View (cartoon, each protein chain N blue to C red):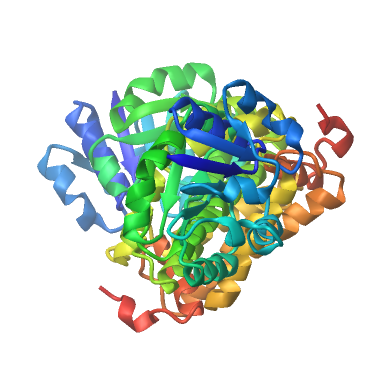
Length: 299
Length: 299
């Protein structure tokens, strides 16, 4: 299959690499062309423009936010103008429900297919093909792209034919992870101030009721205060909580915990956390209880 | 070993039963004597008073709250007056850090030993000896009581020599569970209102990032709206969050998520949730988003 891949960041690069290794004919595009180098070495073709990358059977987008996806799709010589009729746009970016709905309508109008396939997992999981893929879109298109999705992740979960549903599942999933971060942050601040060994406490939690990857991974980062390099940076965490709240607003669902988390990320940014991993939210609870300081936090 | 057991509720009864089955000489006491019947049938001795149950090598207390433990210990003909010198009081109740410290001092003064051994798990886990036991207290006393603790649970975790530390671990653990309840409640309200199948959504969560018992157990109760009979009733959930906040106050640790959860439990009580399982907190998020109603909730 002739595959285009747009967006070669922390996540996009390893995803594209796995598609390439699986033998697909891959054309890649990134705003900063530099990022494509490791893929070109392995035989990928560099597209000089978005338009060129869009001339494919399937084009992936893995971009930072709504703005990037929107301008890449609707902008002059964007995907919409250049993707052949019947070809598929797979959006793996974490975008808003509203944009997903807008993309669905626009591609339909252009006789193209659109599916949403956001992924769960950090960059290391992307490299190891350990991502979980959540997909929604027209059945025939999803069926056709299944081998590609199986190439980037360890398992694909289907959520019906409306692409935006996959985006809501992704957003609410990230909200649930952020909730784990906030709850662990407060619990760690509490037991830490009491003089309890945080590592022992975490080992207890993760070998009993909380024996889940998310508690192990993020609990470890929090205990070790290892917030750099960021696997998923604070501004991205804030964005996803904002989009969860926006979905709640659209559907009329109050989300008080999501609101609280939004304010915690804002506090973290206000205190200089821009480049840190979102698990650094733990610093807010620690500092607010008189433990540690922002200065002690840098790597 | 001559063992006394005070408090034969949802949790105390199966714990006492397991001690009895393991061959310990058991004397049991409950304010409502009726509750002791299944144990007496199996050969336990009924104590006519707290004093009688306290005349043992080790006396367990598994009571509803601080008030019950305090009056049982300090009250007239209570444990403190009747436990022999050198004997051990094992407090398995979920009590405040402050009361744990007060009990430690009082027993020391009376030349008795005090250890805290709160447990994690619902009544079914207590029956199946699947509890996790968190213990803290003087090493020699903990060592002596280890076979008893191994009898009631699947695994015992030691947290040093200060009994109150075990209570803080238990409280913070229950706060973490309550956080899972609140986050799942909001996520379920969101995806439910979007028309997503909640069972499929839960299956996705618990087979990927949230593959932990607590998400499976409580997620299932929330999806099925199975809030009766209560394995752990709302007033107990409120109590534990209140005690977590009290520990935070004592240690000067702000806990905004715990504060939010406290208000959610209050709302649940205000809307008639007194007899429901604490996972019924999900009804608040559902109702506040215009889904379901308290009336549709009763079993």
